[in-house]
Amino acid sequence: MVSGMKQSILDPVRIVHFIIHLSAVVIVAAYSAALISFLAVQTFIMPFTTMDGLLKDKTYRFGVIGDSADFSFFQNTSDKILKVLFDKLLMKETDLPSNYLDGLERVCNDDKYAFMTLDNMATLLQQKVNCKLEPLDVITQTTIAMALQPNSPYRGIINANILLLRDNGILQRLLETQWSVQLSGGNEKSSWKSVDIGDIVPLLLFIIAAVFISCLICVMERVIFMSFFNRIKKEVNKPRV
Image 1 (cartoon, helix red, strand yellow):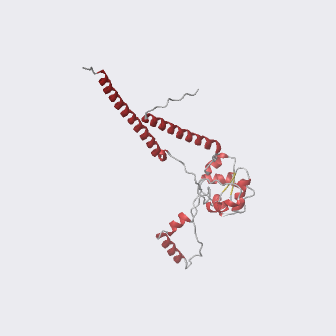
Image 2 (spheres, rainbow, N blue to C red):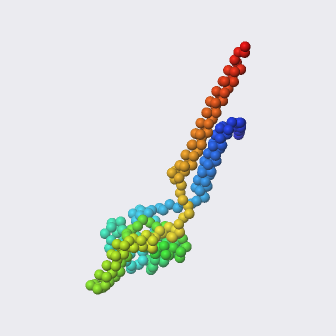
Image 3 (cartoon, rainbow, N blue to C red):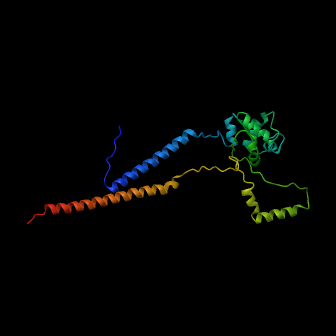
């Protein structure tokens, strides 16, 4: 059963009714949008994000490029978790990937397969695989280096130029612009932006102010009306001579 409210002839009351209606429309629209996004958007939650989680999961395989620096890193590491990871997972792999592309293709094609690669390589090869890659937490930081012969005469010149680039801020700029890699989405930036409570504070303040002003006008009109009514009543009840 639906019942309506009788339309008032007073403007302040109409303003209050309008503000209430506008607030209800905003709340219903926000609720509907949240409900539709919850039902329509599928959110993927990673079963683990660390190497420790990979070990505890016990359902994923793990691989690196065979006979590579990555394999030697796990073989000679002093970290207990990475050492257990090497013994329990890597040693069970009889056919390790031969390159980064092969490893990433196995991530897409094999069920529950994890692969260690550089962020830059994963970003460059993302377009060549048929699935979206999800990064885990960083295992170790890598550095960019140049190999030289022992006692090379060029070492001092190269070090001096590198220090000059660092002092001028060029290395930091390259790190932020050229070498900064975000695996999820690559170089594309999402157009979606989350809305926090702070973003809608101006709207809430506007609605609260409108309701307060409407109520104030209604009270003032009520007081003026009662004063005018009492004056008319006195004039009517005034005895005539």
